[in-house]
Every structure is written in structure tokens, then in C-alpha cells.
Length: 307
Ligand code: AHZ
Image: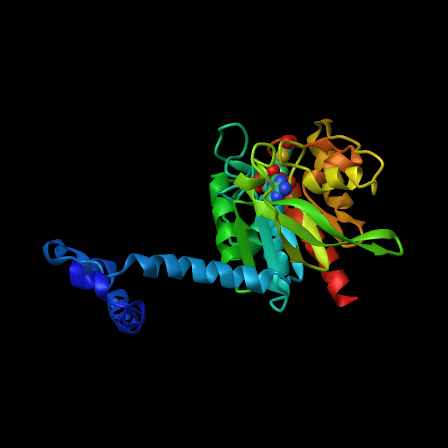
């Protein structure tokens, strides 16, 4: 044990990769019946720390200047990221998610019921990402909402031009004066746990990401939700919020998709956050509008980059 402690990090770094490749070459079924002689490839604890922290800090450095920041990794934010990330592999896209676990409210269909309903034509989005569904005529049903959420998340996370920073929240917007009054030029971030303790700890200043375009999909009002539109009110850019109205599925879903737009220069708003500006109805547990609001938010963003 003592000698292992004395191995220098540089020697370890040279020695390990080849062994790792050999271990990877085994198939799972080759392990059957071999458990008595089983061992993992060796590792030193610092290698684990460095494997994580080096990549994280490289990502922080790389994405400090992003092309697009998407706030919120719920159904709308992830749909936006999928369309943008696949259509424009040249754009650097940072997703900032306040929760430890991304996915927002899309892990279950409604209450604790598993299935997820999407009204047509949002079935096109499911076909695009390869999620199977049962066709019920005007709507389709995915057998478990987590199948949609885990599939879109896997697709988004595999994109080389997208980085998800979770457990990180947007606590302010970067602004610049412009002909229209103000334009949004990036986001101010903090670890969510830090943001939650500004009142009982001494000042813990935030971090920043510069980006010419921010897409806010933080959901309806709540402790964290509707963040950007509430901030637009407090900075005097919007007079007041319309406030989300009661539930009306048909009206709500059409309105959210149609109203997905650049609300102030540099800030596109999509998903349920929009209902707070426009005074739109909520739709409850039907998710087609979240996927297609994401598609429209991406289309609006592409116009900005093509202009
Ligand atoms: O954690 C939030 C969630 O994952 C995240 N978020 C909120 N504020 C944030 C901040 N910084 C970073 N300041 C933040 N992240 O944003 C995500 C929003 O996901 P969501 O699922 O709540 O919103 P959505 O618009 O993607 O989907 C709405 C789904 C709903 S709500 C509803 C109803 O109430 O009737 N019906 C549907 C389909």
C-alpha cells in the first residue's frame, strides 16, 4: 500500500491508458464465471479527481464565450438544444440547469402517472429522436415520460458542441445598451446551492458566460421558474407580467408555440415561461407544445445566426 502511495502522478498517467483499453476489449459475457479472479484496472484517487475537474474547468473556460446559452434543461430547453445542436454543429451551446438532475417536469406525464401524452403534430418530434409511441388518432402516447426525457437528454449530451452545466443557476442577465434600450449579452451564474444562501452567508460573487443569444426556458413561476421574464420586469424592460392563466389544453399549447419569440434583443423565451409574460393558459400534462416551442425557439435562434 505504502509503495502505491509513492507512485508519482506523472508515472501513473503514462502507465494507465493501455491497460484500460485492454480491459475495455472484454465483452460482458466474457466475465461470466470469472468472478473469483476478477479485479478492476488499478486507479489512484487523484486520477478520478483530475479526470473530472480537468474536463469541468476546460469546459468552463471553453464555454465562457458561448454562441448560445439555454437556461433550463426541461422538455422545452432540451428540445431547443437538440434542434440547434444538430442543425448547427459549429455553434457552442451551453445549457444551464439549476437542479442537480436535468429534465424539469418531464420525468412523469402527470401527477405520478407514467405515460406522456403529445398532441399531433408533435409526433414528428418523437420520430425525429426515435421515441416509440402508440397512435391514438389526434394524439400519441409514449409509454413512460422518462423514455422521452432520457432519450432526448442522451441525444443532446452526445453532441460535441453542447455542454450541460447542472446544479448551476442563472441568477442575473448580462446586458448592454442598445438602440432598443437594452440587449441581453449573456448570463450570470452561480452554483444553485450558493444562490440559495445569499441571505445567510457573506457575499459569494457569481460567474459569467458571454453569449450573443440567450434562450430562456425556465418554466412557470416558482422559486426558480420564470426567472428571465421576472428579471425583465425588475429591470424595467417589461412593465408587468400577464401571469399564467388557468388550464385550457387546446388554447395553451397553440399559444405557447405561436408566441415563442425573441422577447427583447438577445433573449428568446420558450416553454411555460412564456405563459407568465403573455398571460397564456397552462396545458397540464400534455407535452407537445414543449417540444414544438423548442423547435420554434431553435428556428428563431438560427435566424439570428443566419442574419
Ligand atoms: O430547474 C428548472 C427546470 O429544470 C430550470 N430552471 C428554472 N429556473 C432556472 C434558473 N437557472 C437555471 N434560474 C433554471 N435553470 O428550468 C427547467 C424548466 O423546466 P420545466 O419542465 O419546468 O419547464 P418547461 O417549460 O420546459 O416545461 C413545462 C412543462 C409543463 S408545466 C405545465 C403546467 O403547469 O400546466 N404543463 C407542462 C407540459
